[in-house]
Image (cartoon, rainbow, N blue to C red; front, side, top):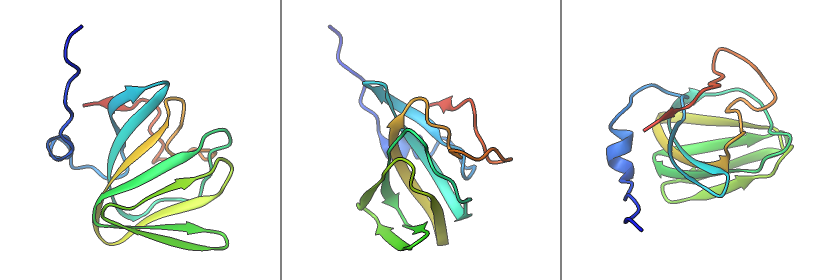
Length: 123
């Protein structure tokens, strides 16, 4: 057996600059580990069949829900349960996030728009 590769998050974040375009950096048990740089507001959506884990690597992420907001700072994580409508926002600065979700998860969930990324780049 060969030694599995080490993934350096800072190095991977250094490979791209576009916002709201998740990149796959690892896979395990049908799940993908995705990195994204975000700025501003995304769009309201939900994932019918998948939970979604958000982990803030750098910056601040506000996750808006219909009945309130959650604010995540560097080192914080939150799991959005399947079917729960949410709106990710990076209000004041570029924010770096890592997400864990099933490989089948579409970044815009139940909504198709210009921000939908159907084929994710692998770094």
